[in-house]
Image 1 (cartoon, rainbow, N blue to C red):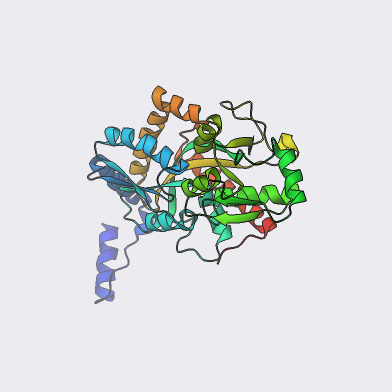
Image 2: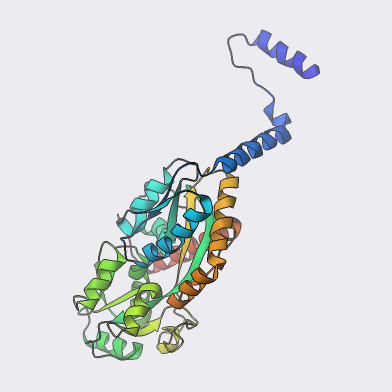
Length: 341
């Protein structure tokens, strides 16, 4: 009764003003209410189709991975999961849409290493990469491959470095765009190898791949998911993978580090994010379903065949991983001098 007397006194002494309820004295009540709302959201989720934003064009590795899990996710959730390709600005267009989407779990975003690079590469972003997203789960972990057009007279990384030094500024590389993984992976390689390569940005990895296949650009650093099949078919020549360890699905292809550029290590990944403020129970539901999908033999075997290691981490694990990636690439961007207005 003391509370009600105090509350009545507040009403009489602060007439016309909103009473200052002592909410801080009831944290357990607020927590219970918050949890109840979150659970209610989860029970009603999803109530309509889910928009799965991808920041690169159809046909690229990001699109391939998103579509591989979207059908199974739709079956698990009982609503359509529609992949929405919003290419451009190294996935910033899609990221901005995701960051400002309703916080109800009906919009999710496939993040990549570019999502970790962009905060330090771009002077101005319309979103905060560390504050506007909630981590759901890391989907895969995978290397990039360093590939060339078959007509280039090189057989390995050492040959390529020698050719680049003999032709300074004459060899170019395509990428999915300024600030993309392919851009920074190649820039770091050029810096560590002491060579000068010319960057040719495209509006997505699929366009960059087409340019190398046509011989319009000389080389490319891109995800093993899309480059390995082309290398096996003889349409591209694989010189190396970007990780410290060889890929278990392509163990005949050496690493850059063991091919004359010691210490080189760059890893690609895919992970699902939702707008910050999405109910915890919805995040948990999404993580649980995606994790189950990644453990399914047909999906796991498909990804492994492409060179992608399925992960399915918890939201907490993925959030910690992402923070570390942002810090790592901030240093690479600073050391490379790369910057986009």
